[in-house]
Length: 117
Image (tube, rainbow, N blue to C red):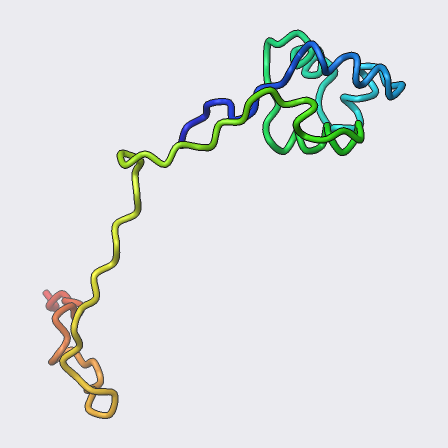
């Protein structure tokens, strides 16, 4: 899975928005649940919030998503992404009523016991 940024934040708009609401960077960090230096990095454009952090930002600031986000890139669904192989079904040769109990005589994987010395 890719670790690329999914959301870009308009760093020039973020600081005036939280200041207009009456919050400092430190207070916003506490309310969103991140370190104060993280808000500083978002405001400077050095880093971008995750989608969850952006949702917390918009809820805390009371602004719509588009007012903070400048671009949104959907996660890639490329063909070379690893996928789990499909399970193959094995045809059963017995019916529910005609199954035989597993005994050492008819079990291919019966435990082998050591012969006494």
